[in-house]
Image (cartoon, rainbow, N blue to C red; front, side):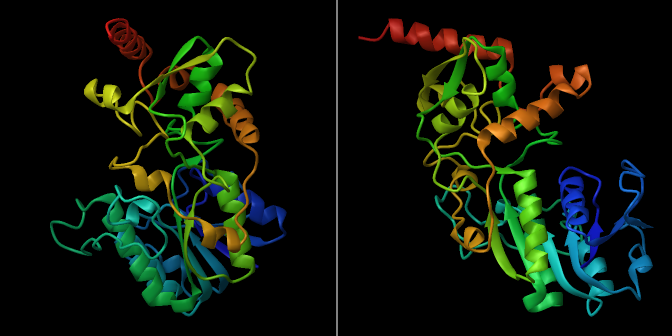
Length: 339
């Protein structure tokens, strides 16, 4: 296929481009050329600024089988791209988010769950609209332009090599250090994630099969609890790591939040539970596959240990070590005083 990738050098982009090239496809990258220029010498590079007037003009008059729009949250970017590419590409794959759903506290949303109100395209509220509302507007623009050729992919937490959010990486980093570990809630509280390579390799296959529609894109294949995740990571290490499970009510009272100090974790009634319980039957039927957790952990940690020391020391998610000790001490003290 002839593939156009809008972006391509940020987090999930290299995974998608590498897989597309491995599959023998002809890849063109369109971006500003500022992030890791020269990363893909075998791919054509087109330079353009999506913020600038006429920023997509370099794409005019070209034909592609499939377009992958990876970084766009700004609806004006998508509006500009689709205006140029409509009629010049057969399929447009847009990476949205489960944040597009209207109520994050509702468990088990499928693709028919009500979406957020779309963000305005112009005016004072456009730039400041919430992330999910912007994603919904972007989805609508793609669908209006490409119809059955529109593919909307809604990932949840994307993890693995290249993840700078540290929302998943916190756990293998913490477990690798060993000792007593604060574990949130109950082991069967829900957890979902998707390896960036599982996501992007499947997206390439969606392009190959010309599969349109809207898809939740998270994993694993079967319903998983946070305990299965944490004990699965622990199985990768032969150390003294031990989990102390602290109830949600105690964590909430001590201002320890799900998806922040305790990443990946959610619980019934939480404002984040939809991020951990999305229904994925439609994506599985369309060929989404999942590599073993141990493979994701091993590769994520290999990448983590290759990062600069300052980045390794200051994770962007997860509870700080001293704060973890404080909460654990408070929990043990509360148990000593229990009848």
